[in-house]
Length: 93
Image (tube, rainbow, N blue to C red; front, side, top):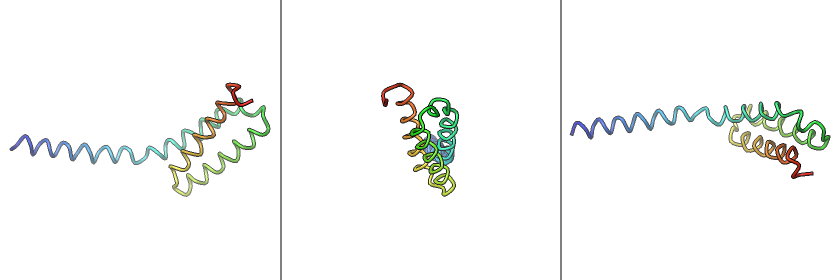
């Protein structure tokens, strides 16, 4: 009986802790992606078209972040990172 009660408490504590640790993940991922895009400026500045799209995307992502729409911000920035990588790899030229 004592073991099952202790196990139940342990499982409950683990579940509660995991949700509190995951609470900031989308926000930090959004910020990390924006920073990654800003760090990659040398890769996309040579293309005026891509530079304009990336600038617009970053502005949109920052607006989404300010509105608290972190999942949309992450989606926006991940798509932009993929586009930058495709262009820098030469597969989108």
